[in-house]
Image (cartoon, one colour):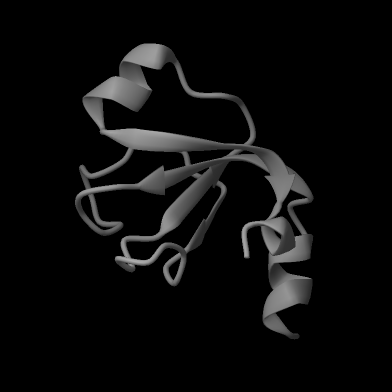
Length: 75
């Protein structure tokens, strides 16, 4: 299975970029459906959720909303 096929399983998700730390326990809200560790110029990654996060979650975890898109559109 290719990377594109793997990420394609989930379809469109609500994606958020991690701005100041990488993906690890406690650095993003629980319940992420997918992630991309290579996203972003600083390499912190992005996480995808089936449902949008609240403004409080986005603020508390210092995330940047990327939109409701398929994984291959993150690139």
